[in-house]
Length: 51
Image (tube, rainbow, N blue to C red; front, side):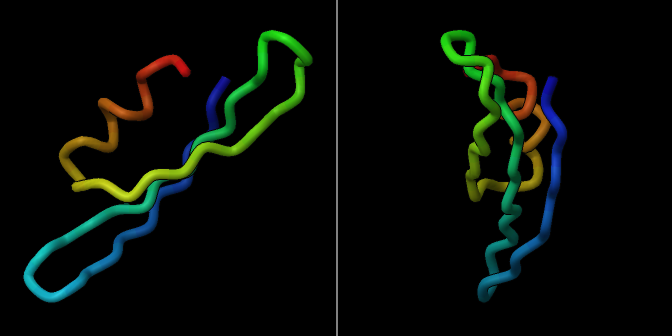
C-alpha cells in the first residue's frame, strides 16, 4: 500500500509538513510518488485518502 515519509518545514509563523506517499497504479501496476505540503493536522487524513 502506501509508505509514508514526512518532513517538517517551518516558514515564519506557519508550520507545514511535506508528505510523500507511494501509490500503485491500478492500470499498469507501476508505483508513483505523490507529494503534498500541508499542515501537520491534515497529514493523516491525506494519507488515508485513495487516489
